[in-house]
Image (cartoon, rainbow, N blue to C red; front, side, top):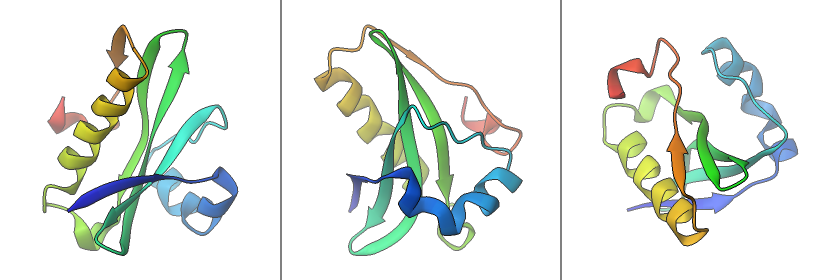
Length: 102
């Protein structure tokens, strides 16, 4: 089962260079979440808020956990968070790595 837990950007430091190398921009203004499968940390994701618009940001699943449905499950959980916070619009941009999902 996939769960999201809020995480401070400073606690993501060990993985930031790997995420940036994958083409992600990491914004301080993003609500960051650690992605867990059970008790295992398997990646990160986030939502950036611009008024009532929620923008998917900085989603990254560690290479050894890819192609297991974790990304899709984490994005669905972000949609739930956005709906709970009364978002009126969702936006997404894609890196070369993630464009196949959009």
